[in-house]
Image 1 (tube, rainbow, N blue to C red):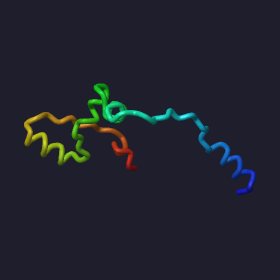
Image 2: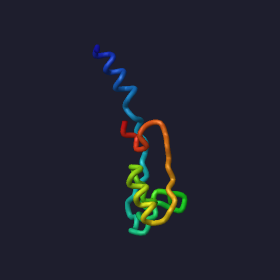
Image 3: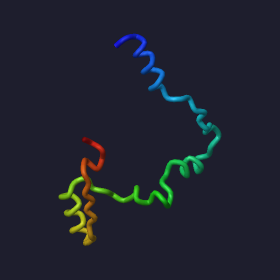
Length: 79
């Protein structure tokens, strides 16, 4: 690649600098509210299983139904 091509790629791929909010002076409780999932993110607290066998085993032991989510590709994005 030529030097000009590399320079153009660098300019195109460099993220724009955005002023980030400052987090100085926050209390422990304010940090907990920012970091921990809220009511709308309750699904993050579900102990999801990544294998069918593990999910079937645990649903049988707990006597609970199991949700089987099928999709094209790896559900964790590990392709």
